[in-house]
Image (cartoon, rainbow, N blue to C red; front, side, top):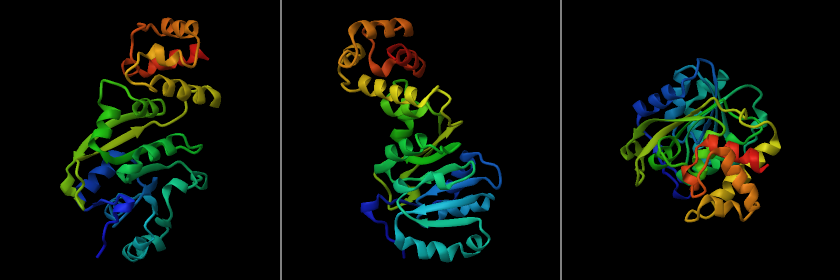
Length: 259
């Protein structure tokens, strides 16, 4: 019997139909290469393989590896599944030499870290399909107010809220509902250079540094009032605007002006 480890934030997906819906939401062609984070008991792994995907599954809990090896011995021998015992946060995407997609039921406590890691990786996935907290998926894909997290996603790809997953689909059941978040068309096309990419994040971090302050005041801690006023004018913004009210297009214009 497999027991979830609280220290690893494990909530095993045990609902076959949900796993199949996640594979459908990933919208991948047969034989596509998938990097799966935290296969756990292999519920999602099974559905990915069933759909004809090739899977690299990275599991941080080494005690789960023997059971996964036994369950998928045929697929491993056929070269359709590669199991790696490792923490995904130390995984080198440079070892993947062809286009790939990320599909995962990730621990809630490292959601932001994983999203950031792969969107900013030198070798980005083409898409990401993630089972995350419902609140996080809504904040990224549905909220009318932007956040540091939502902008950090949208500057690289197009997020969409696919469907809600009730807590009863997991063992043990988490305290909140979950949702499947899909991010497609991932690229660095928003940036003309690595320097521009760095500057974008420098500006939005400054903008969200103090949520109660107006955006202009936050930015004036790093740039002159004249530079900030010029950026607001170029973006067509009111001087009383707050960070959460700016669209990605507003931020892109302001960043280029402040540069």
